[in-house]
Length: 380
Image 1: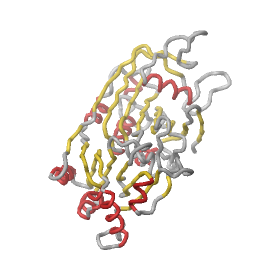
Image 2: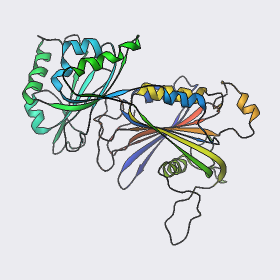
Image 3: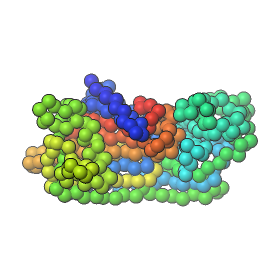
Image 4: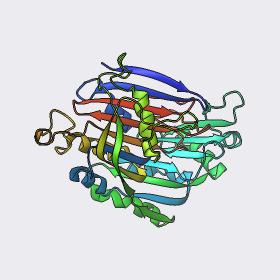
């Protein structure tokens, strides 16, 4: 059973959807949420009560997961038959146009499900000659259009009408872009380098690794929360889910929450009730991060015997520690200019390009899921 709250905040208008569920629930959507959020640029883990990141979790952060930046790639390259057969159909391919702003540029993406997404201006759309839909963010004026091409269809092959129409449209417009790319081949991981070889002969390619950073906090005030309740109690025994989320955002932005409020100064403070933790650690990874990496990090957090976040894992740390961590928070930030947020749902920039989610993971196998998106975005 899960409970969903929808909260609108103005200005600027954005949406925060909060769900409460359990990893043990067969209907839990936690894996779907991770897998369908295709394009991520930062993962941040916050653990109160720990001075250092547990070794098993640090090892997962350190595990190699390179990505590539490929420059000036014509979109006709993405419908090449060999490219589709060798990479799109034989693994999970993530491609996102780099340094394109969806509110003023054409933007493109290739999803691991095999869809090519084109978010283009009206002039480009008319020149392409392909069937698409007006962007949901400006349907009245129709300045932007979204075209989807399923590259995995059996009929999408050279010589067929659909393929030739797409090919002619891309050749006519001569669309090209710099792309961030990550590819996870099926089976043998040694094949991962072959996609780089495919592009190196014709385009400038750079290999990149995610950048990590650790921040430590001492004597930090933590809001008291109840894993079974999203709203506050009548007696004020715990904070609401939204209060906790605002506090986490302040901490991650480096805002001090330990100072008391003053009548004449606008100052953020930790909500009541709260408690002091001697040490906390916040560790982040930035770059081009595929959902598979997020999933393995989440699993490492859940399975860590040191943290013992769940009752079905090793309980040694809980027995030996008088105050094990009460929870862990894993936050994943999507690219603000990605054409999609979750799955194939269109993403809009508007004022801030909100496109992130947070798992607040409790020791009893329950979790809270926070999804923050822009004005017209649709959460899964």
